[in-house]
Image 1 (tube, rainbow, N blue to C red):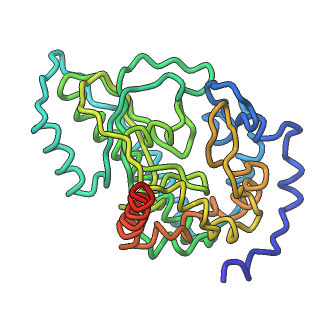
Image 2: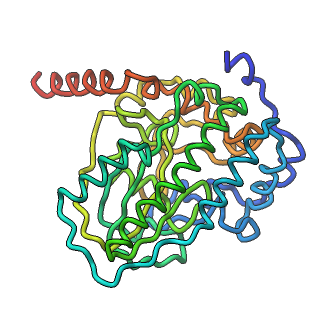
Image 3: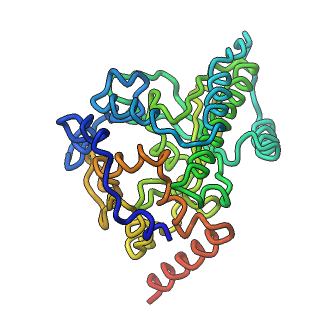
Length: 327
């Protein structure tokens, strides 16, 4: 159905006139063999500071036709403007039981849906940003499938905004818990780029593997979730990186590739800033993304995102891997 509606997509000429001379793929480091920090390419904290800033401004001129968009943006702004708690003078020596209890209660109360922690790597900072914190916490916020599957219609984009609102609240909630226990903490949340790129630390913290569509895939949520983060020096126990044989699956699956209206999803990995990985063509993706409230088709159609499918897929892929090893 999506293909019949959108496969003849033609970008809005007014939007295309705003494209800068430099390619977003060049800014992202497509084809570069040297590892380096990422540059801001979109969702810059100040659109006037990035090459594609006029396109970022244009995004907000598209009327989705739903009043809830403005309401959620206002609520999220209020959350972001709320001051953080003061840091207690003495640092609490948090036990594993206390930490795990906080994690489980927060998940039970739907503050966030998944949590992972890892050592912070400075290569995750955007160019020019310096971070002194030693650790990073990643939080995950699952989309409601019945809503996200409506992408790229406005109702789908509204679900993305709801989870970004939860992500903003969850990051501040976690940061306040740390500060009340005497540990400095800084919450980070999307969609603005902020100080770091979140997908690499999320992968390192056990959130899953990068999929062909450029988003993380795991058995719990598929690729249907959003992220936020907290920087801290609190010695939280690290979670382990996970493998579910996503690479092999994506090599053979072409669903998101075929469903993408602007044909922005490559069928093979690319070298980006010295790393061979799945990559989405920024210049092809952005026009449709801007005109359709962030699109989200690739997330919605990913087989892993369907409820109850992910763990079965992961088990089948692992069994296949083990059979190959033993043969």
